[in-house]
Every structure is written in structure tokens, then in C-alpha cells.
Image 1 (tube, rainbow, N blue to C red):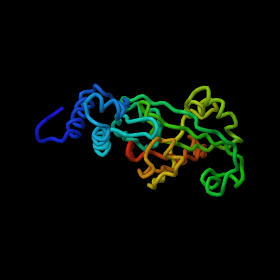
Image 2 (spheres, rainbow, N blue to C red):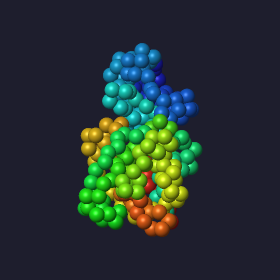
Image 3 (tube, rainbow, N blue to C red):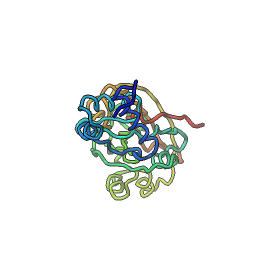
Length: 237
């Protein structure tokens, strides 16, 4: 391919960008490999790699080690409000929410969590660690802590219903409110970067929260690790 005065890699970049903007490559779509692009455009793999790197620097695509390159989805405006619900947040942007259970564990409450939830240090907790997904793209890794004395069956309900809100409703908590939210920014550890499928040098948003029932009793202490490149937090008063 030739276009006088424009480097070949830049022409490839512009062609792929046009296909993305024209929805021929929708959000989440996997791009052809370097080898496939080299064959398509009649260039070497280094030239194809240069074009992909330029698209990545624009924030148009993301590259996941061992999986390939994918079209980035638009950034999510994630609203922090009195009623903060992951599925409702994502669906409000006309995107499809889903979740995965990463792990579950029983453990004793440390001093910080015990204080936040009004428990005695060492009280048994149930941890559900979940992945929040929008249109197939991982955006949030959340640790949700519940008092075992009150929510002993939350794991079985979550596995069946796929929703913490629905699981809580099964145990008599039909509504709950956000009491506190603390937001910070840091670099992810290796595990967080791997699970979120993002570069290790890309910052994450850390959202610590306490949710209470309608009587004001703490029901959940949560820590969400959110992709800084895929989400921005909106404080909704």
C-alpha cells in the first residue's frame, strides 16, 4: 500500500482506525495478529507492530499478553451514589454487565474491617471476590466482606443468582445504602494486573466502601480495584 508522504505504518494505523470508527471492528473485537496484518497489507511484521503500537498509544486498542490486541470500549462513568449497584451502573450506559466469582474464603475480621462493620476483631467473615465486566471487558476486581453470623449463605445464593444485590435480597436485605466511600489511586500488583488484563504500569482506582441496611446496620465492607483506563468515578449527590 502506498500513499505519498505518509509512512506505511501510519497508513495501516489510519486504515484500522477507520474500520474501528466505522464499527467494522466493534468494541471488544479482537484485531488480526501482526502476522495477519503483515500479510494483508504486504509489509513485514515490524511495520504491522508499529501500527498496533500507535493505536495502543492513542488508547484505541489494548494488547493483552498471550491473547492479542482488542478494540477498547468507551470509558465507563461509574457513579458513586447513595445506591451504588454495579449492574445498574453498567446498564445505564447501554452496555451489558456481567460478573465472575474469582474466589471465596472464610477469614477473621482484622481491626480495620471490624471497626468499619461494628464487629469484634476476629469475628468470622465471608469474602467474595468478584470480577465486574462490561461488554466482555474486565473493569473491576471487587473484594466483598460479609459477617458470617448474618450472611452464612451468601456464597450459595451468589453462585445461583450471579448478583450480590439479589443474594442479599434472599437473606432479607431488600435495600441498602452507601454509608462511606474512600477513593485512592495506586499501581496494581501483579495479580491485579493479570486479572484485570491490563499493563502493570497502568494505575488503578481503589474504592473502599461500607454499605448499610435501611436500619443503618453495616452489611458489607468492600474494596474495588478498578481499571483507571476504563473507568472514571462520578460522585452523584
